[in-house]
Image 1 (cartoon, helix red, strand yellow):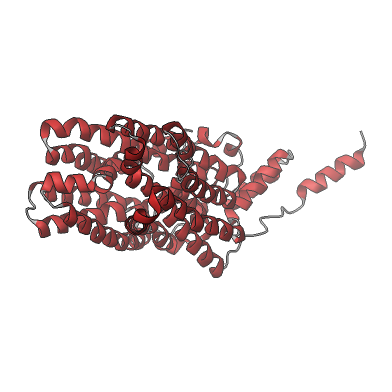
Image 2 (cartoon, rainbow, N blue to C red):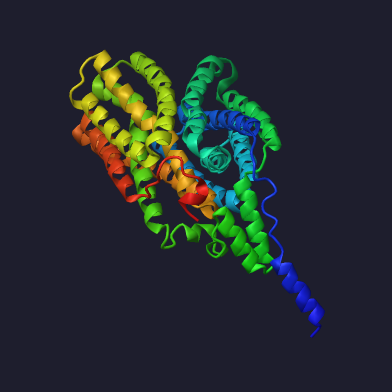
Length: 449
């Protein structure tokens, strides 16, 4: 054997490792990323909400029965769930920036192609693309958790997550103004234009330094430089040995399994409440509390505006006191507020106040929740973890609708709302005790590898 070659290999292995070329992120880059992420989430929400809003009008044009319409909605939820599961591995294996481009493109295509609907099968297929748009928030939290500083990570993200109520209000406004002149197809096409613009803006985004570090570790492993990969992983908080397995498999490895299971079930149950008190809110308010449809719409506008304040508030509280504790307290308080609304509040103002307080804690807490999701999973599976947990939401929505439908005929709207909305909401807060506890202002490298 040529000893010169051996000596050369030994010397090469002892050279200092070339650590990530992009370890610093400027304030301007964070601001630009946050602005683009905010508008991307607004228009992804627009597309997501618009489908539910316009489905009755589409059903009337195609002469679908109520059962057929419900069947289409169910299958759309199933395909959306399947597509949303693919987003996490994309973020972990191909980059946060590329995943952001794909989710935004998915939302644009979902809106645009829906406008060409000619039958239920076509609609189910193209609406599956909305799974990319729905997963926008999972990729956003993965990306921004790695871009923003530890001390204000949640507060920065709270403004982006606040795009949900803005998107809901925007969808309602565009529908009211343009539906009579453009029809439901035109309303969907309107959402495509800003989504395409945002996709172009995302081309200039800087890739996350944490992903760049993970990519370097992965390249060293491929080259067989295991010692260098391990050394770089130790420096950057990335476990080079664990990351050799498929990212979804890693979610259920012994070191993270308990956290994944408890957080997944908690989100599923919490979406029971999201479905009942947000999506089916007009039904709850009109049939359960006797509020007129017109007044219920005003209540939704007011409460959604208050929910935006809730996002910013919870983002700040999570940074200061810890996100898991903030989420637990908020979900339990939301459950208590809705209990008061259902059984003690009578008349317009008491119902408005108790409903709005409940939405403030329920919806607002998602700013802390998504930041928590982003930081509670290690870098090697951060995208997969956030996307997987995020995908559990629509599952809860489907189950909540089934439970509400089954119980409302026998027990009435108030009791059905309590069973399908309040009880799961409080249980979701209790289940969060089984998830990982993270002290405030910790760097990602300190939390988990």
